[in-house]
Length: 180
Image (cartoon, rainbow, N blue to C red):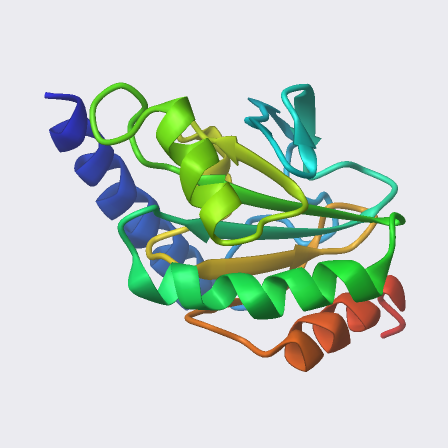
């Protein structure tokens, strides 16, 4: 039953995100001047991730959110460039990977931790148990990366694997603000 709810939620989020883009233009994430509402996530106790409550995105900091799944081979291949990018951007950037796999059904916290260790994750990792962040950011696939500026406005999002250079470049653009 939970898996069906997850799939319905993801399909709905994808439809809403596509509809917002088609109707309103822009980035498809609502009012571009207001930014995305932060969501509280409980991080996994793992390397670089200390089991604390994270507020994502964190207003006042550029944020990179990467959506992944433990069953996804492209997600696993994306870990090395994500790690390089995380090392290069510094602590002024909130860097977090999020899985929207249903805890207790598809995966456990222990299995996420094992996957994280196996793939050399060194930044915050958390499940999106109620899919609030998944819906807010229109994460309709994995892997998917979203970069938000310090005002929680989405400046870039893309599906698939990306080089460390691309990720750092998109983060640097978000650091520059909105000089229209």
